Amino acid sequence: MLVIRDEQMAVFRNQLEGDFRRRLFERLKQVRDDGLPALTDDRLSEQMERGLRSGRRFFSTERDLARYLEIVLTRMGGWNGDDHPQPAIDLLASLAVPGQRRLDHLEIWLGKARGGR
Image (cartoon, rainbow, N blue to C red; front, side, top):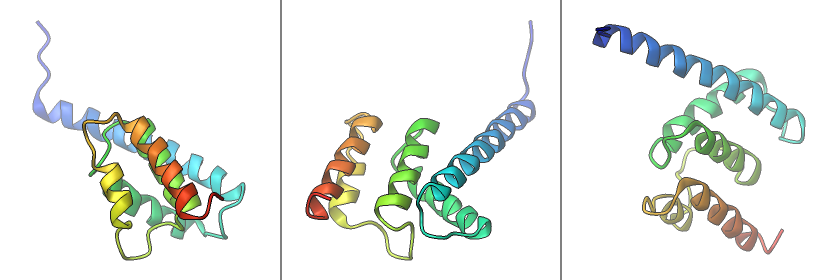
């Protein structure tokens, strides 16, 4: 029987996390180049780290975390100190609703909050 020790599992988790961060950063650089305000790689990396800390309150899948970061960066101006407006937090924190649907609701709310734009 194969036995995997906790230390080995930690190495696997760290490798998966590193792979996810690299893929996410490349995706966010593409999003930035497609229309985000001018962000240096260092500033984008900082925003990504803040976004991951924020997003893990609401999401557990890579897909949902990546989409959350894209929405906040492109539609909400990124993370600038304060948390999201309370209506956004309420939408995101409804854990009984699947993550993808919560993100859909956030985008709908952002459209209405900005006058349908």
